[in-house]
Length: 421
Ligand code: NIG
Ligand code: FE
Image 1 (cartoon, rainbow, N blue to C red):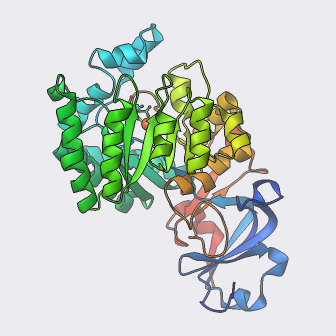
Image 2 (cartoon, protein in one colour):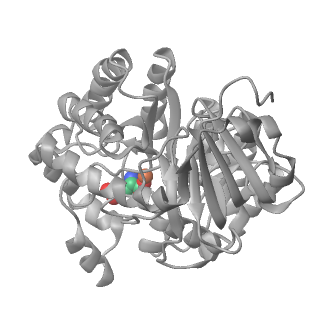
Image 3 (cartoon, rainbow, N blue to C red):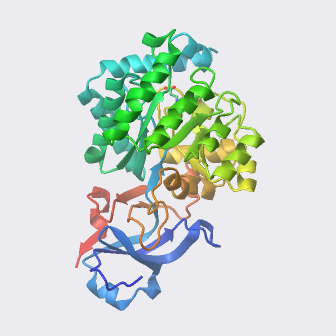
């Protein structure tokens, strides 16, 4: 790309780059690299020794990375991080042997968080969400997807989506929202399943689409939640309104969720512990990405792992998410999800990082993110590590030394490295 077209706003040098482009080098690495940003976009990337002189002369700001690694800013494509209260009591109950499904059937689980979320006003929800998301940004996150699903009335579902949207302004993290009204059957509809599905299809989906409050519709397709037929009705409605489809699929049993996702050309099917080979094949044909959520697997003590080897063989891309939620996955750090994906699901550290960058971008339809290349948005994370494998290796450490979003940063951790010229 022509380096002289735009003035260079930022030139980053003395760094190693994990571009995550599919290349022969692991991590698409460029050792001793340089990266130039113009108008929020990567204008040039390559080895330091090849930086065009013109580009060097016009750079207004420089960042000298002291040998750190730069990756695409992390993208968490599956969270439920706006919610009221917590469920530490259920954590204790599960440790005594009560199962997640039993808690859900007894009115706890998701429905307990629904009660707490409805009771919390916007300010309370927003403050809690802000604290959670700022914490994730400290750990290298620049984009997050947030689902509704703890409101379960038109008013409260849309409210959750608005609160989630507002977090972008509070945290400087890009927020993508998903309507997950088919998360649990609300108590008011206890014996009227159809009426609730009808409400979701007739009112919530059209309103969310019309008000631009969600990019996708998700549904929990499971015996403790909604049937494939109920989910299919909502997905048909989503498609009619131009919204993408995503599915919580086959987490606790093989309910045909992956095949359902494929049938609707879903962007992703998520969880997938019990997905059959036929389900994986359907996903491969439809181009549906698998989202692995090892936090829920870990916390619920699940006994079956997703068919990772089959995803590899059939070329189904694997994203990794935290699934940050107060019940099955109180996982607040993207790197921890990557670690759990390696240890439990046997992903390589490189696959885990691709799952939080390139493949997560694919799930969220962010063409210009998740890979460091000319034309991509300059969303970056800087890490004090010797090799990118360390990102999935340490448990609970934070090697992140700063984030840059669309080429700009007010991250205090970077101020000593930046120089205006
Ligand atoms: O992705 N599976 C459904 N939804 C969440 C759990 C939410 C909850 O327990 O509050 C999940 O694991
Ligand atoms: Fe989830």
